[in-house]
Image (cartoon, rainbow, N blue to C red):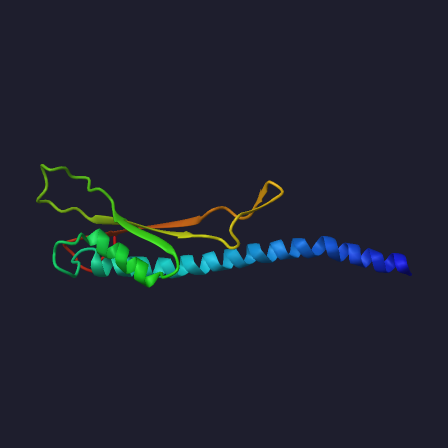
Length: 144
């Protein structure tokens, strides 16, 4: 009778840490997928609203305003928005091409890496998601 009880205790001692690790993986994947879904809805709306005709004093770059609005909308996540370089040089400076904004979101999984007896454990430092949105300056509100 004692051998059977000890067997269940041993099985539970082996399986419980595996279930905890599996639960942490599922939690992080679900939190990351929810953040990605939210980011994919918010980023194009912000770029369309503020990428072409930014609000403010006129001295602030549109990419700075897009980055600030992304920070406001995605509080708690590390987000950035930057305008990619245009294909035209200074010769065609009067011709405005479609503007492309690259918006990135970085998610730090929980728990952060830790060390036990000199062995590193933990998830990767960051999970990153990127979304590029192109808008035409001649057709306001149009996403390309």
